[in-house]
Structure formats: structure tokens, C-alpha cells
Length: 450
Picture (tube, rainbow, N blue to C red):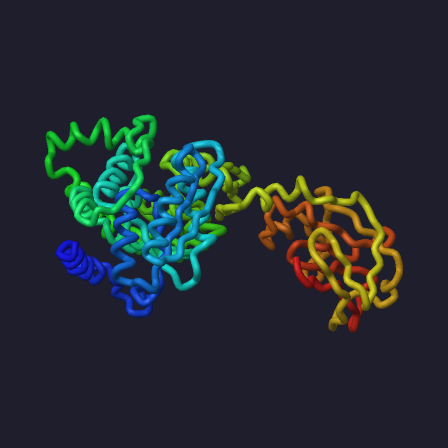
């Protein structure tokens, strides 16, 4: 036991040194560690070794997916082991929604990790070399690209957490030997050998066949993942440069996009379409965006819905919108016609935003304050002489010039006194119309916030 532990400490010190982030600002190993422990061989060994190296900075979390009858018993095994080590342990039950069981279980698990992870903690997981190789193989069969084949990273820095996988280069045979030498108890999940699940099928049905032909397959696939990680890092640098030139998270310029090669266009669109989702869209989804929106006629106002986003073309730009943004016309309550009173003391709340009356160098006559004014929606075809323009212009043309999107134009309302148009309330603010009620030293509604 002592000899084994001495060997472990020596090897693990090497593992730790190789896992430290080069960026000194990360202070990676100065943080605490939250170990995701399933009770299996890999995670129980990970729990033991990290506790031996950082006894005061480690705690464990067991996620009970409640999908199998003995899952609560496995949680007790983990909790009992942590008590023996005098280590804090959290047992969290989660509900797995319907759908792809493996994916939904993973989503529930990571949501629980985020819920319990403290700001100064790194999440540590027990994935090993065979897990990595299986991931590469499964993603290859699913038709993924460079990012997918990069598989799992030893140190994965994300916006919401950092994940460390110190066992990632170790073969399962080595882990089995260490666990046996230390006489550690662990649980066995029967679904790990159930070919109904893709990963278990790969492990039980496909693995032996391929390994018989290619004995070094496991290390080769894991090595391929490392090469793909390097390639993906380089690719992402290029994508970010192109993204910065083309637009931002909400829109891309089609003129700038067209200057890129076809391959760089696809990569940029794939990253841009991902938005806040976990995974990038399929190649088919990217090609649909190109075919149905980007290459549509300029005046077609093309729109494509790929859950959960709407992708809309307006003039020479494509926009990525949430359902709430794009469908706001269906949810906004728009009065056909109404009376409003503009005063200096009260805000006026309209569908385009909140307004206050502000004195300006040029604006509406003070005689219009505190009296009923009419407000009605734009119906199309209106011509208005906006202040600062020569003659009357179609309101539609003014909205286009101001790049007020078609899906927001239902919020445009026209202010009038009798039959005289005083101005237009828009999502960008109030536009003054030239009329007999305009004067120097007047007032105008000012948009406070949308």
C-alpha cells in the first residue's frame, strides 16, 4: 500500500505539472477542486488521489439521475467513502427530461455541477484515454468537424466553469491496476455494458473488433484528438478574425461575408449560428441558411427558423433573433387609435418605449401640452414631411433609411392634432414632422428607454 501510494504521488505530481495552465493569471492549481464522482472505478480513484495531494481543498459531488433503482445506493457508497477521508460531499438528485437520454442526462448533470460549484473551484472529472478515444470515434461516425474531433480537453476553460481531466492520458488498464493495488471499493453501472446506448455499444461491440486489427488504436485516436485540438485552436483564431470584420453576435454583413472563401464562410456561419447553444449546428443547417436566406433575393425579407433562433435577412445584413424578438408583433398589444396627453411631469409609455417631454431649440408648440392628441398606428402608404428633410417622403422609405427592421415596424405610431401630423414615434425615438405647430423654443418627446 505504501509503495503503491508512493508511486502514485510521484506519477500524479508529474500529471499535475503537465496539467498546469501556462497562463500565470489562471492560478490553476491554487484553486479548490470539486470532483464529479459517479462511484465508478475511475472517479473513486480520482477522489482518493486528489485528496491525498490536496486534502484541504477537495470536495466531491455525486449526481443521482434517478434513472436506475440502485442509484441512491451508489450515492451512499460515495458519501461513505468521503466520510472515511473526512472530505465534504454533496449528493444531488436531478430530473432528466425526455429526449436523447444520454444527452439529457449530461445536461442535467452539468446544470447540477454549475449550481454547486463555488467561484474559486475547478470541476475535476475522471475521463481517461479510452473515454477520449471513444469520443473521437463516436463523433467521427456522427459526421462532426474539427471541433468535434478535438473531443475532450485536459483543461477546458469555459465562460461559466473550468474543467480539469488529469486522467485523460492514462489507459484504463493502468487505472484498473492502481485501483486494485489500493483495494478501493467502487460501483459498477450496468448501463456501461448495455449496447442500447451508443457509447456502450462502441465499447462492447465495436472496440474489440477494431483493436484486434489496430492494437494501438486507443492511443492513436487519443493522439488524433490532441492534433485536432491544435487545428481547432488555429481555426478559431481565423473564425474570430472573420467574425470581427463581418459583424457581431446579432448580425453579419453579407458584403463582407462574400469576400471570404467558401470554407471560411461555412466556418464563420457555423460558429455564429451556435449563439448560446452548447453545440454548433449541422452542416445541413448552415447550407440551408446560405441557400434560403443569404442567397435569396435582396427584397425577399427571407427568414429561416432553426430552433431556437430565427435567421432573417434585411438589406445586406443577416440577423440572428430569438423567438421573442422576431415574434414580438404577435405578442405586443397595439391599440388601433388612442388619445394621449403630453405633459412635462409624466412619462408617456408607448409600444416603442417610454418618453418624457423635453424642451429643445426647435420642436412642438407649448399649446399642445396637456391637451388630447391622437395616436394611431402606421398602416402603410403614409407620406410625411419630417423635420430636416425637403418635402414629404414615404414613411416606409424613412424607416428603411433608419434601418428599423420590418419585424419592429408595427411599433411605429403617428402623433397628430386633428388632421395635422405632428411626428412619429419609432423604436429609435420620436421623429418631428414639419407642421404649423412647430416653433423655436418648443418641446419634443424624448425616448428614455425601449
